[in-house]
Image 1 (cartoon, rainbow, N blue to C red):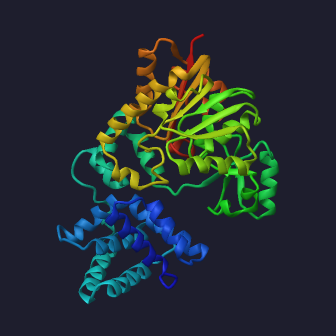
Image 2 (image 1 turned 90 degrees about the vertical axis):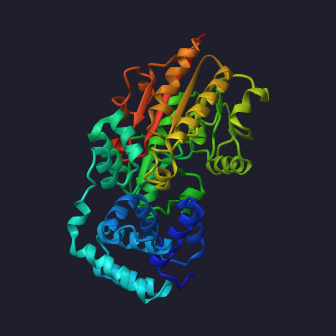
Length: 448
């Protein structure tokens, strides 16, 4: 494994993802754990895999001009995609080097005939740079889909909801490489103290413009640092850090986090509660329960009680009522496409409908566990109204003892307040708003 170069490893991962219909992040992690690569090569493999998958539709459209309907072996098509991605989207790799490397890989994995075909296709693309601008004849949705490499059905949905300008901005943001952000552990340090500590460790970091507890860091190796191990921070996207403040849990309260793993929001709630009170953190999978426990221990948090349960079964567990409930619901994940590029290719409109039904069932099941005058936050990492606004609007319509809490903006950072909708109770963050994950948060209140 150690003898293989970054491009060979990237091609192996792309082949495995396609062959096993698996997730690129899991395949990538498995391969990188076994390969003895430098930090630079690890970064290159990661960029090549995620970038090639993100831009797959654009790459295939360009390829179609040169290979037509010719049936290519899976690894050959992936090699061409990988090479075109480097030629078009990576400035630091010279075009001739990308072509030369592709031809050598084709020789090693196939035969001279395949190598000649790969060479011919790539050189033809270089000779016709205008091919990248040749969009399909058809309506605007088809053109945006190909130009920005998103499924056409999804583009059509977003055009209906958000309009053309915002849809293009969503797609462009999804195709950008995400940055890393960390949440300062307020039980152990402040943001300014943590910034000083990071500077001493020569980490490049700056305060977030979105969340007051967030720090944006350059490079993705913070989990290996002493400061992480000693619990000074946890790794979390800035949008995700808006959820715990929206819950407005106070010290001494009783809180239920119904779909808690891996524990980022749970531990954030505990920090805001000053580690006083009780948080029941439930998750379906035993190994994830253990993950929550480990994270809490690392951060020095003692008020979290992790349990294993299907969230739909929680009402039958005899847990009593809660002052606050967080339902961070399973969702399509269309707000985190920049981190999980496979998502956009693997999901269907039927998936969205099915998951919306589950979300509604979860909300309906958990709501009776909320004490009178209590607050429930419903959140997702998607930007689909069917999974977001439509769920909470339907719920309050069918459950008159609950109302939308129009004071949500008071508990959100200044940067986000103008994103709160006219109800005053819901906020939809799109990925282009703050260059962070797409996220939805709604706050409901139970009448006294």
